[in-house]
Length: 130
Image (cartoon, rainbow, N blue to C red):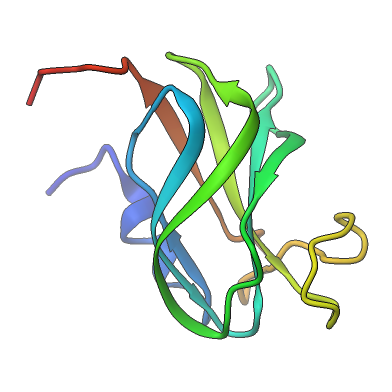
């Protein structure tokens, strides 16, 4: 059993919405492998503060329909930096199909009131390992 990635099995299966993202390369976009939403919404990319909390929003998807969405590319500004960790968070839509503020399009939560998100790290651009 792989104990290093509890997020990919435990957290993701809770509730009706999930997100899955692999390590990313540095650059100006993020590729989200899979998003399942129990209502229309967005994937929002946040920086992480030094204490691991969500920081500023650096990018978000277009409106995603309820259900399964795969291979979503999200442009980010500023660009992703090698060695940094970021957070991909699911946000609902207030009905206007446009990501506004976090108050308008609030983060989605599971049954235990945990915000549905997944941390990811940026690896070197041309890693030949693995």
